[in-house]
Amino acid sequence: MAFSLSSKFLASISLFAALLTIPGNAPAQTAQPIRVAIVGLVHGHVQGFLHNLPNHPDISLVGIAEPDAALRQHYIERTHLPADIFFPTEAAMLKATHPQAILVYTSIAGHRAAIEQAAPLHIAAMVEKPLATTVEDALAIQALAKKYNIPVLTNYETTWYNSNTAAADILASGKIGDLRKLVFHDGHSGPKEIGVGPEFLGWLTDPKQNGAGALFDFGCYGVDLTTWIMHGELPLTVTAVTLHIKPQIYPNVDDDSTIVLTYPHAQVIVQGSWNWPFDRKDMEIYGATGYVDTLYESADPGAKLRIRLPNEKAEHVETAPALVSPQNDSLSYLAAVLSGSLQPHKDLNSLDTNVTVVRILDAARRSAKTGTTIHLDAPTN
Image (tube, rainbow, N blue to C red):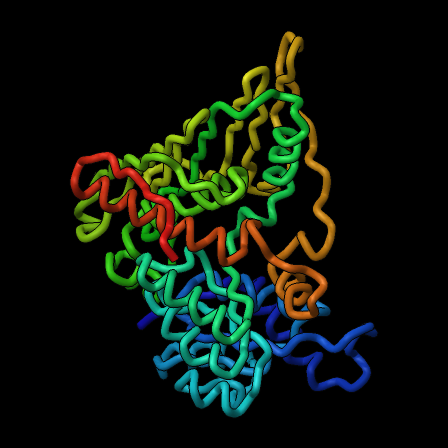
């Protein structure tokens, strides 16, 4: 099995490993960093976490669990992290390292099993989006969080975009009137086309391990943002259409999706695709009297807004205000939750929001499969 890592990533990890061996190089801190462990190395986003770790004051990596021996060895050799923090099983890693939280980088279907091992030890969890592939798994995770009184968070890249928060604030301020429509465009040219690793591509294109293809992989972003903007409200109906534009590349999952959600006074269109000519993660908010769009630029994807307010003759572009810690990155957010200074509820990462996200994605999958509109009843749990 072949793997590849960027030279920038390898340099960062090598520097981090070297700094660990030099006394006195740790930055001054007002509190002990939280002890976190990684469960799984098959999700490509783990590289971003490892890249950000060396300069992050709130986090201390104490263990990594991955059953694939070749993948473990790959990371040992390429990152120069100490070999003794790598374990073949989550159970062995938890017993040896006693983390305060696990960061789950398994397949999406693997989230439940990872949390089932950590929760009885009162270890919190942050998983990569989406929370689960099925409503059954989402509700089981929610039950574990309640039973053991632990936070379970879901990480989305778009949570940390300045522009999404700024756009939602403009809507909430009433400057563009009552909400009428949300439109989301999320995706890229395809996981194989952009060169994701074989360990990532294998489960990403498996309907059991990923839940679907582009429908779950990129549809979840717009559904998460919608649920947040709607303060957790379930849509009245869910209608979805999926396509197999590239069946020779993705024979088992969809590579293009459109989800339409209806609310009493608004409509939402979520377009998730592995067929965009360019990468994009943007949102359009239309009010009764104006609109605000987020502009995606690869160099700074959360920086800009395009706005037209009532009585303006043309739209204008603004720079979105910077987010303030701990709302500006996933690791600071996790540390704030574990310290008790932040209580996640109906926000982009919270468990209540993301159980609703899975309900909507599940309904979208059923709609696409059956060619019917799904009417969502109020949750019974």
